[in-house]
Image 1 (tube, rainbow, N blue to C red):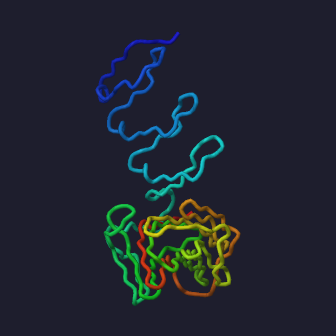
Image 2: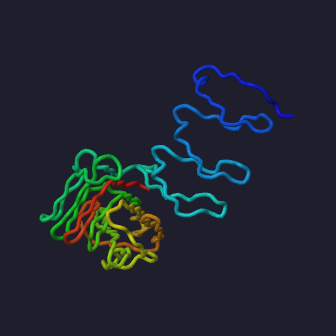
Image 3: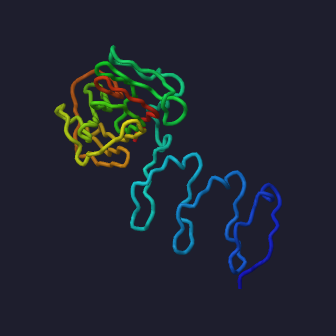
Length: 270
C-alpha cells in the first residue's frame, strides 16, 4: 500500500522546492528548484519513463554526438576545455600573452586577436607570405597527447608537427591536412607524407575544428588520431627518427598566403 501524505521541509532548502508532479499513488515524481533548476534539460526518456540523459549549463555546447550504441546510449566526442585528467605538459588558451610561442618564418606574422575565439576572448592568429610557422617548446615525455582547437581560411595545406628529443635522436610526428584533396597525411619513418588510412575528411574553413592525437615515443609510434568526428587508430605506424640535438617542439604550420586561428592548445602526458 503506497504511503501518501504531505511533507514539510525547513532549513536551507525549505523554500527552494516545488512539486513538479505526483503519480496516481500520490508519490512525488520530481522536485527541482534553486540554482541548478534551470540548468537541466531532458534529452530522452526511455519506455519506463526513466531519464536517459541530462545536460545543460556551461558544458552543454561542448558535447557532440558521434554515434549511439546498441543500448541507445550516446557516445560523445568532448570538445570542451581540458576534458582530460593527467599531468599537463603544455597548455595555452591565448587569453594573456604568447610568451610560449615563437614565430619561425620571417615573412610571416602572428599575434593575439579578438577577431575569433573558441573560448574566452582571444586566439592566436597566424599568417605568412610564404610558409608560416609558430612553435612552442614542450617538456620531454615518452607518451603524450595533443589537443588543439583551430580554424583556417582558404589554404593550400596546414599541419601539426611535434618533435621530441631523447638526448640523441629527434622523433618527429606530423599530421598534415589538404583541403583540395579532403584528406589527412602523416610523416612516415622515411620522411615522406603518406595518406592516413581512413583519413578522408572534409573540414570546413571559417569554423572551429578540433584535432586530438596520441604518440608513443617509447615505441616511436603514432597512436589514436581524432579530427572532429573522424577517429583512426595509427598505433601500428612508425614515426621518423634522426640524430639531432633539438629539444621538444610543438609546431603549427600554414603555407603560402594562408591564415589560421588557434585556440586551446593542450599537451598531456599519458
